[in-house]
Length: 211
Length: 79
Image 1 (cartoon, rainbow over the protein chains, first blue to last red):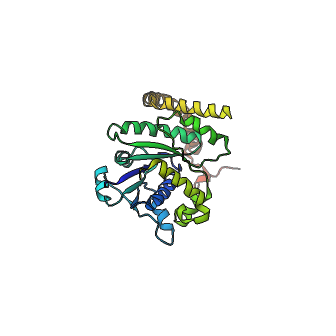
Image 2: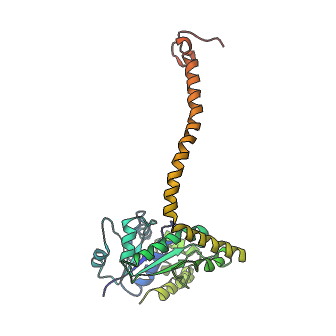
Image 3: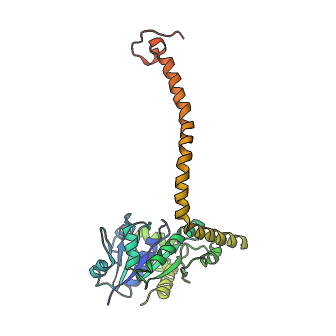
């Protein structure tokens, strides 16, 4: 069975790509063989995985050079899920290939006007990609939601302006996500403290990823 | 609350409308500023150029170098 490729992409830095990629991969690892490919030159996923005393639940590798979708699928054919942690840029070979290679693009967006504006270009890029990758699915994932904030509540209305659907499952602003990065683990390994975060990641998996 | 919703939504609409023709307007914009910039630069650089000249004049007045910058000045100006 061909691997199912999930691109976590947003050209805006600090949107939560690595947090979503690492925790999503940890959740998927509980279901099937999964790998994270760190495409970001900053190497945040690799750093995250290297922080822990024990190995991260999911293998994390970097890919560089002139790779393409075919080569990626071939190289990692033993995995059922490949999670691509994309760089914070759209004007690169890497981002273009990631969009061509993926089955689904998850776009984390913060409840902030600046992040929303920046994501518009990405939604247009995904529309363009559909010419070459017509089967691509894409969803916006609201990240760092603060339920009591007026801005967070106003997000849903503003997101209707996008051509990309929004996942019902959202990620709240939680210390557990940052603590997990610091410890080099996923929220799944945090037990009690990460319980709510795990529920959020599980909701995303169940809503967006075919199992 | 409604104002926040409306503001955010209209800002996204504006951004969305702005991204498609941006490449064209950017090209126009990029053509316009260089024409304005040189004049700005000229006005900015002129005073410094004048200053430099005046300084040079005082330094080399009558071919005598200013004593403050010479290790062994040929002439020391009175205080």
